Length: 256
Ligand SMILES: [Fe+2]
Ligand SMILES: [Fe+2]
Image (spheres, rainbow, N blue to C red):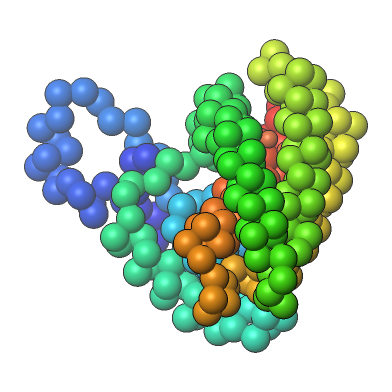
C-alpha cells in the first residue's frame, strides 16, 4: 500500500495527521512506490539507493552494491551463503536507530554532484595520504613479522594514483557536462568512469586480502589496528561513492 513520505521517511512514522495539518508551510509530498519495499527480489543497488542503512549492512557482509549491484538481494545472498531475510531484518533494525536519510534519487543532479565532491572526493584526498603514511610505518617497523601486511602501502598508492586521475576527469569533464544539462551526451565518458570504478574495486579486493578482511593479528600495535580500521572505512566510503555514481547519478544523467 502506498504511504506518504517526506525526505525518504514515512510521514506517519514521525508526524500525526493533526501535526501535518497544523504545519505553516505546505509539504512536498512524495509517494513511496512498491519498489521502496524491502524485498529479497529488490536489487542491491535499489535497496542502497532507498535505504541509507542498507549500504552499511551490505558492506558489513561483503555484498557488492556498487559495481555489481544490479542483481536481486536473493541472488547475491545465494552466492555469499547468506539468508536474505536476515539481511533485510538487519536493514530494518539499522534504519530504526538511524538518522533520517537523504534520498538522492529524487534530488537535483547539481546537488548530488556537490554532495559527491564534498563527502567523497575531498574525503579520499585527505584520507589516503594518512593511510599511506601509516601503512609505510607499519611495514617498516614490523617487517620481520610473518603477519606484516607487506604490499598494503603499495596498494594504497595504486588506489590514490587511480583516484587522482579518475576524480580529475569527473571534475573537469563529466560533472560540468551533467551540470550543464547535457548528460545525455555523456555515454562515452560514463562508460570510461564505470570501467575505472571496476579497477578501483579490484584494488579494494586486494586490500581485503592484504588485511585478512580487516582483522589485525593479536600482536598488532595501535597504528596497525588504526590502519586496518581506516582501510575498512575507506572501502565503505569508496563503495558508497561508486554506488551513488553508477546507480544514481549516471543513469539519471543519461535519461536527461
Ligand atoms: Fe567520483
Ligand atoms: Fe567515479
